[in-house]
Length: 336
Ligand code: 13P
Image 1 (cartoon, rainbow, N blue to C red):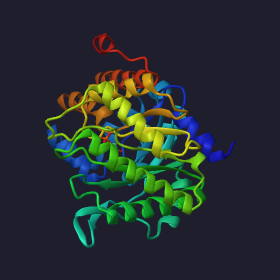
Image 2 (tube, protein in one colour):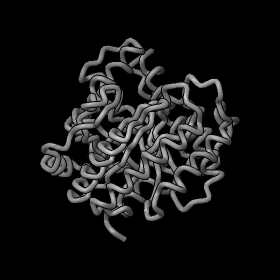
Image 3 (cartoon, rainbow, N blue to C red):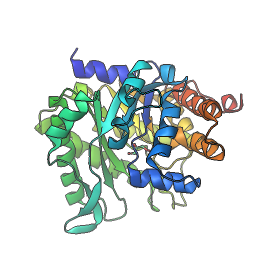
Image 4 (cartoon, protein in one colour):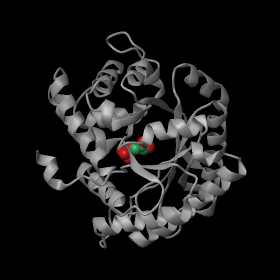
């Protein structure tokens, strides 16, 4: 078993998943503005270290994705943030792309940047304690999108990033996110997501990436958020499995879904059904940002000194996600 494969399994096994706490300062400011908390460096750290020191880290969180600001911060007990995370048994990770920019010659689409100087940045992050990385490609969906150009350019970037991450001894999370915005059908989402993922693997293989040492982070297969033809949670799970079965090579150890704007309960229920119906060899778990943090953030904003109370809310959510990652969640458990 390669070292990279071991890291991937440490992150994903035993009902654990990933806490995506790598919101850029811009995104984090939006999240904090929404609950009327000033987005200062201190507040961003305070909220995040409240989560990282929660009880549920030990059993439910296998990895935490950090943003550049956070990986360089010290906790209030004067520990580095990666050290604080490692002590819980979770693996510290880092977002290494520098954001999605307008794609030249297709201005309604995006290309994710960050390849220049990446080898040097990766070396620095490894020294700071990171053992896995994240890069997110983002795709609009409509009749004409994603274009072939967006599919090709983002796959190229994801593959070059992945090769560099593995060269530095870190597991790359490959995140091609087909957005849920729009009035498209679930069938469209299935077809387009499959194309996007298949192209990613074509380029990963071309770049000689070790597929046993990556984690795929895709969207679930959903009808667009403006669509009149929503499908049931059961259908979401079946279509998601169908998509991954045909587009992901079997060497990949695991798949960790993004929540993508689903509510906490929706993201939990869909993951639970995916695991109940999982007839593949892939571990299927979570790499949630909003669907792990939303309630905790709301609670915290009412009294930012209430660390225990905030942690209780987070622990509950993490526990529910962990049960869903094992197909053992049920709605009744939400109110216990
Ligand atoms: P959400 O779960 O909020 O979609 O965030 C996951 C993530 O890391 C997006 O890049």
